[in-house]
Length: 263
Image 1 (cartoon, rainbow, N blue to C red):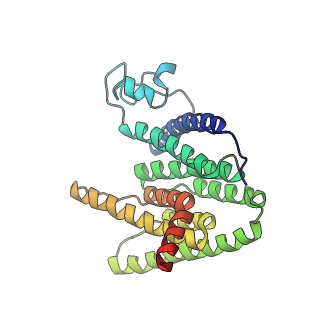
Image 2: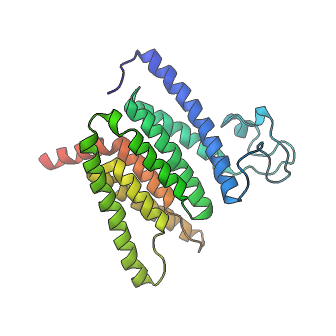
């Protein structure tokens, strides 16, 4: 249940969440980069090329990157565009979550989950691994918001079936493909991520998550192959994107599909 607010209040909160999302995107991108390089998460942000400490005006999400034209103010080295994309993506995701849930418990829950999924996507894209800590964080958020939902018993039942169907199903598919392809087809982190997200999506939403993530994953793999890259393609970002689509648009997609069947 969400709280009805005047349009002006909704716009104000939406702007605040957009800005906060951009800040969180910047933080998560920095944390993911340091995790990949096995650096400490403490300490001030700095240029990876010259080591210069970044000032306050260089740490404004989105705007600093655009004003500096994607280059370090000290040495002129290129700043990875991933930083800008993460800030924009997180800002848009936070705004989308608010448009979906308004001022509600669901919004608070999904904001936490989206933040974890952004970390999953960035770390997996850099290291091709998904930290167990982020899976545990997603489980903790799910359990913490079970009772406030009000329909927690039904949600547990649907969530457990979703976790078993998509986590267990992907594990079985992975085992078969490992034998056929004679190499690892799907990482253990991907399987655990599917299982954790199955708790949130349930059976119906999980199917949408699976379809969307598969489509995004195949498109990413095709783009990588055209570029002549033989490196392993991380699946975590596709799963994260598919889950967000399923959570925010799953009911709309389901209703549209059912209406087409009825006609």
